[in-house]
Image 1 (cartoon, helix red, strand yellow):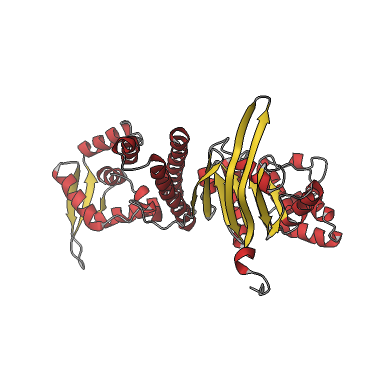
Image 2 (cartoon, rainbow over the protein chains, first blue to last red):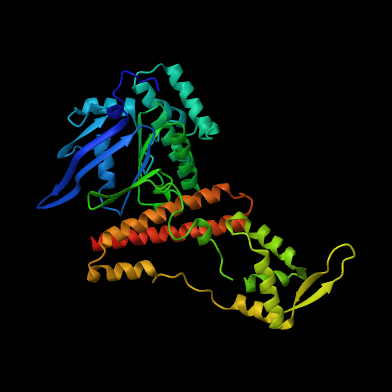
Length: 255
Length: 168
């Protein structure tokens, strides 16, 4: 590491969250979606937030991405306090240091695949030639080279999500946020998207993923269970077999 | 082990070692390697009950080997095996008993029990995914076996989540 001038302990956290809370108010009712969450994510970690629907995991992700504002609590991104920033500053952060993937892809339907991917790069003020090169590299990696000139409508759900992933990665974000990225995909497309996320992670990408799917969650190296707006458990499953049964025991057939 | 061995013999006579190899080929690494001793013991028992018939084959340069074939009674047993319903997955397992009994004993906390069990399942899920990745992708039977185990684990994890929602 060539970060000698940085304080390693604090700086090694891409994300720090303290006492984050968000309550939705509608008419006379109140729903506390996130109720005092503390969370640290280190550089290069792949973290899954999992839990039942309505547990607050997506709200938590939206607060972290600045898509919604917390009622209480503080957020640091790369050591920098961000929770009090203006909309415009948040937009800039999302453009430069964050990639976000949603359940329904949110691609611009009138733009080609290539333009969708390049857009965040151009908006961030990067040189068009450099952005094009990044786009070409990503399309090759996501095995979508042939689709550059198509519009999203021509693509399957799985392909659209891969394009959304390319768009999220084009500016080499510090943090990749993924909100139920496989929630609307079939099992084959789910496996493909998870394979790609795992590959990004191996290359050092920090990922925070929200999913209700236990299998998808288990591909992360840290799994945080969210219940009722709070963190109920925080586990690092390493696949070591210390319990009563091993993987081999489970698949053992009884004659 | 009895019925899978008999089912393999439905294809024609074979000796113990051939059966071991056939099991390995079929199930791949996902299935624990069958023990040859266990196979011979099982074959001996099946022969005694008349479900298979053994015959010594003389070999000039090696010790004799015993080849087995399915008897009519054996064939019927295999047919009955295919015909009968297989056991449903267990749902009232030991963990469920612990969860149900924890509050009145005041010796364990339900949510802690759930968290501990979830950690175990997540670990297994990860080990299972690794097994699937390491196993020969071409061995469809083996991949399907692992896939089944993963789906069961997934259901168990969903159920734990449900328990936690209700009990917390």
